[in-house]
Amino acid sequence: MNLDAVLAGDFGAITSVGVNEDVSYFEGDASTPRNTRSVTKTVTGMLIGIAVARGELPGVETRILDVLDDVDVRNPDPRKREITIEDLLTMSSLLECDDWNPFSSGNEERMYLVEDWIGFALGLPIRGFPSWAARPEDSPHGRSFSYCTAGVTTLGAVLERATGVPVPEYAREHLFGPLGIEGERWAYSPRGLAQTGGGLELRTADLVRLGRLYLDGGLGIVPAEWIERSTTPKARVDDRHEFGYLWWLTASSWEMRGMGGNRVAVYPELDAVAVVTSANFGRRDAHELTDRLLEEHVLTTLRT
Image (cartoon, rainbow, N blue to C red; front, top):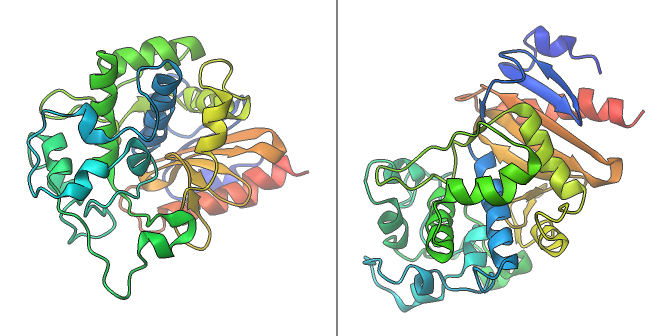
């Protein structure tokens, strides 16, 4: 695979590219932890699947407020009591939470300004659906997608409450340890909750391992049934992307995505995993750059 264009800066600040076990580094080396931002969200989905399989969570139909039953919920509304784990896994709860809208009450930048991130999330008002917005019942798969970091952060609190174990310890015992992943670094909320919505640092080779885990049927770590459910469309994002359980789904790939164009792309038909780590933060075209890098250089090689 010729990556001279990356060295030339054609794709901005790409820091590493991995295809299966073959990894090229453009900043740092194999030991360098990569902050791939919201790739963390997909890891959270894996941990939820493990907890369900172990019986620590009854299932995705479990209502959030049945687990977090001591949270003082602002803006009370009976519809909040019906929000489930699956609603947060698919980013389709009725909470007014949209990171892509700077005016949204639930925009993640507002969450970071307060100490209680879980109280912030569950205290959000219920979203409205004006005539120009598709209601869930009128949307593909019966769900209306809205990108919400606060919701995935709340899944971390649900996981801790259900298992009785802090998320980093649970991940070490049941996911990272079995895969041989070491040196992971979590971000934390002001109250000490691991940020399951973003900021987890992992090495590039570790990201490849996580992609291979799903490609190889879970290896007894994540149930194969969970993998199938996670990679089956549950909500429509746009004309090119659907959404599973915190996986982005395209016609040819399952993807873990993070700000700056960070990507773990699993290609089932090619039996391949590609990882792009990037520092293209602040670039509006960051994901487009990664798309082009994968299509023009990685996939071209894999298909030959």
